[in-house]
Length: 228
Length: 228
DNA sequence: TGTAGCATGTAATGTGTTACATGATTCG
DNA sequence: CGAATCATGTAACACATTACATGCTACA
Image 1 (cartoon, helix red, strand yellow):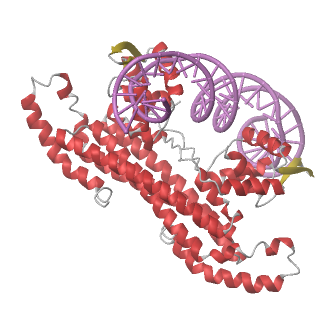
Image 2 (cartoon, protein in one colour; image 1 turned 90 degrees about the vertical axis):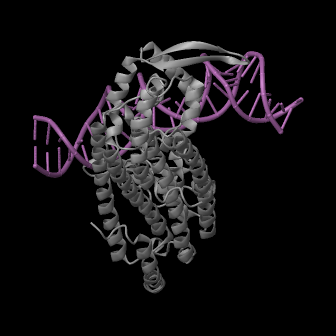
Image 3 (cartoon, chains in turn yellow, green, cyan, blue; image 1 turned 90 degrees about the horizontal axis):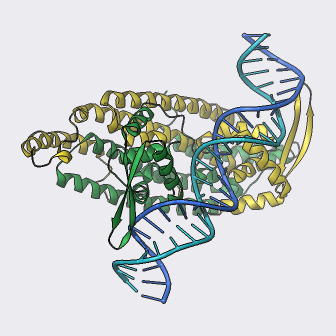
């Protein structure tokens, strides 16, 4: 349901073709949304049938014809209504976090490897974003213009940068955390199997481990729980 | 593709019914993933056909029968392979951030209202999460046990808490940012319409605005760009 | 000469959501 | 007495992804 409004939003800024819209989704809006051309084209046709946008075909030299869309008054109205509607709570789907949740099923060294690989990927994402933001920042400083449009775009970009930075930080902290608790991966599942026969073993090794880990644990959580 | 592994992951911890799995998704895993019963039940049947899990029906007094699933060796193997596979880059879909991106299309006061409403919703989410985490923390402290399983679960919970906190912080900063640049919403679109006829107006009001906003702008971005 | 970019689409498949269907028990 | 919880599912629909189809230009 949001894709159509993403398209309307972009067309509220400039006239564009499906191809242009796709590029914009991949570029600035990659922090926020993503879509495929095969979804954009049918949506554009639908929006045109509904009178939200109108198109004109522009022939180009040495390139295929371009179908350029412009938003209509109906389209602007629909967009504004959507902007005044609070969104339903976000439906997070973070594959890596889900994997992390279940990583007690693989050896600690593999856990550390996966965390390091993922961290690197996020770092690359961040540096690409940074480059992009700096270019945009330079361009507006040269043009010497400031508008609400630019303001909101940068607010979103800032959120994107923050998110990447904090995810990377989390990876780092979690790597350290796993490193210092590595030994927990080796000794598996004593208590559940036969609680009676290994009370002593539990009372020694398990509690010892717990005391050892407690500090690390509380340190890892520092600043997240105490204040309320 | 990840739902099946979420189910396998949960069944690697304990035996559970579709209904139990759904509750777990809504509870701890809500930070990470979400799913509907009407998607879980068919997936369970599919996984059983593929030999990843096996079921037994447990009759209950005063309650409907329960179909409890347990993971098989094949299931564990599939889960471990998935855990060793780095995920494709996350496909973010943040409706509110997309709305924010286009909010130059509504009055500044409405922008502020939407930001405040959304901030409040996130604050409620955070306090629910905090309550949940504190309960879990208390329970493991009482049980005096520490395992890799618990460790990874808490790592994920920490990420969830962090994310909420930072989103709320972003809302606050952006509210202040918009408040101090409010006047930008009133004067609209001079340059594009007729660049020739209003050069003077541009060179006065627009540049003046720019100088005024520049400090606020750089302040809003402080700490995000400079280091590289 | 083949890969990437420009440009627009359809078809098939996969994933996710809402609605429908059933039925007992418990709590306010 | 109505709503919520427990419990399992199917069917219809909406949304998303991959594969297929076409064709021209620029560049290495």
